[in-house]
Image (cartoon, rainbow, N blue to C red):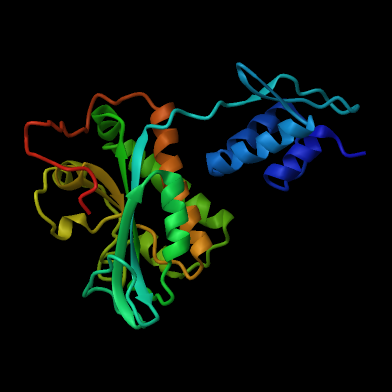
Length: 293
């Protein structure tokens, strides 16, 4: 007979059943990189079937079928959403008589297609994921990328992400783990951008490095924005992720956008503000408009 915990593990990650409290904790840590919306949907489904239950403290994972009891093991409540709005720019080629609405040319895009360039939009995370699915290009190559912008509910959140801790100890290792879990091929366009080495073709627009303070003060577009993360505060009041290529499969692009947004939210929910290495951004420095992309 399948136990409740075996069902839960099967739904979430198709893993072997944990047997000890230490293994349970490691299991919870391992599933955290899964997009919160995905976990929430699956937990809700399990809750309806009576496999798990929820109380004010979180999701309670229980097992009452003769195996070691692991109650109470609580799944952390969904973190507060500090990302206010999401925007995306998609580079590629579209086939057909008419170009997609709002498309504009980009000299860096070299792929095939009747209409070559990029399109952009903004909205809630749900709206953006649907927009990407409906407007994904027909053609792409290694010159094509997806740029994801996020704005925040307050300036403190933006400043907290302007830290080396976020980039080197949170962003890079979690992105690498995400790619491994999705079995993205080594040597693919994604890894060229992730490794971000200077002088490597197609890596020059998404290099590895951290330049938050200098980027946040830029009033125009120049080469300093060509890094994994571009802190373009004075231009757009957003943090732009330039890491992801235009994947061959649009489903992977959707997962990448959702992953980046959840990554920002989770860092802000779990990490305390640092005392150093933040640029101070002031409203009276310059007039800005959110998502003028």
